[in-house]
Image 1: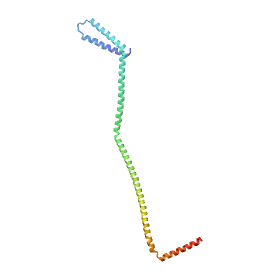
Image 2: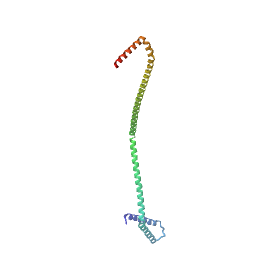
Image 3: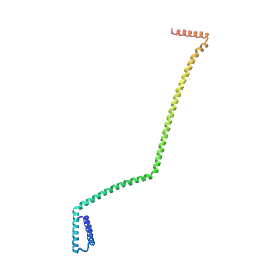
Image 4: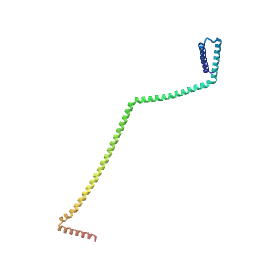
Length: 197
C-alpha cells in the first residue's frame, strides 16, 4: 500500500470513529450495550469494506481524475502565467514609452524640422533652376527678336537705298561724267583686249 492510500485509510477511520461515537450521544436510552457494540462493530466492518472496495477499485480512477484535474489546473495556471508575463512585458514597454515620450516628441519635431528644411532647399533649388531657364529663354527670345528687327531694318534700309540710289545717281552724274565713264570703260577694254591677243 502506498503512503497516500495509508493516509486516506487513516483519515477515513478517524472520521468513521468520530461518527460512531457521536452516534452514541444521539442514541436513545432504550438500546442495550451489547446491541450498541454489535451495531458499532458492523458499522466498522461495513466502513472497512467500503474503504477496501474504494482502495481496490475506485482509488486509481479517482486519483487519475484528481491528477487530470491537477494537470488541467496547472496548464491553465501556466497559460495565465504566460499571459500575465506578456501583459507585464507590454505594460513595462508602455511605461518605457511613456517615460521616453518627451524624447520621442523631440525626435519627431527634429525629423519634421529636418524634412521641412530639405523640402525648402529643394523648392529653392527648383525655383533657381526654373528662373535660370526663364532668363535663358527670355535672352534667346530677345536675341531672336533683335536679329529679326535688325534684318527687317536692313531690308527696309536696302529698299530705301534702292529707291533713292537711281534718283541720286541720275542727279549726281552729269553728261560730262557719263562721257568720262564711257571713255574710261573703252580704255579698259582696249587694255584687256591687248592682253588676250
